[in-house]
Length: 360
Ligand code: 13P
Ligand code: 13P
Ligand code: MG
Ligand code: MG
Ligand code: MG
Image (cartoon, rainbow, N blue to C red; front, side, top):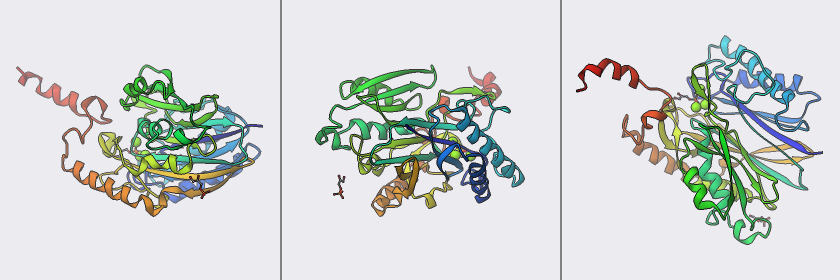
């Protein structure tokens, strides 16, 4: 029977501000998963990056399972009670709907899941980012699955040599397009480079087997604001026809600029960190990414290994901090601050209204 790996995340309330998740929320999430996950889950891990709780689950129910999505929803609801009692910042903010309708997608939480035949050895990496958006995965996914200067396997591994297919979502029009690589990389890069709008939803090998899947959801206008663009997760299968573990991690050794950071309205470098350093506080950032490695064994999550804890990523962190210093000096100016139409916060309409008589 196939195994499904599901990662569902939500910001249930920050501790302190948007920095982290309070330990009581993690405890509560584990309690609910333990009780309600019995007979449903093969295994689970509860973790966090910054202020986002991540539920990593394995099961035999396939993708889009109402049972699994309800378990996550119920877990986040219970956590919301704790968050409200502790008056954590933005308690329950990602639970935008009052009643659960069977699928958690488009309700606030982010979802990445894939179903596959577990191989004789099945290494997977769960990447989880805070203070950014799903388009943040575009550049690293391109490097992992289409760039031979990152992934030598594309050149020397007969099982990778045919390349991969990228499923790209237009998050505004809610349409998807599939590109076959390497044949179509020039066409594809027109879209991937516009990572505020187009985001890689999934990568498949040419046999159609899933290699990677992200929590890219279409943008939903709910509660009068955009959702489904938040703090993303990404699952990548590794080795034996997929990128080696080190090839999957390598794109993060050179921190790229992503949208997010303070008030979701600034560009900043995506800094790879260990779990213990996933507490963005400087100007609410800079944006963080952690990578948890697992070996699946009959559906059990053997791990995690905290992949970016490796000292070999120290220089990437130093580089990110240098870039952060430089960008911060620009203060409210672009290109540190996002363009007007991409900010999560803006006073533009009010200021325009106030000054409209003075424009001549
Ligand atoms: P080992 O020789 O340590 O097994 O590594 C093999 C490999 O392919 C590393 O990318
Ligand atoms: P989060 O998306 O992580 O909640 O951060 C929001 C924010 O405004 C940070 O300044
Ligand atoms: Mg938050
Ligand atoms: Mg967050
Ligand atoms: Mg965010």
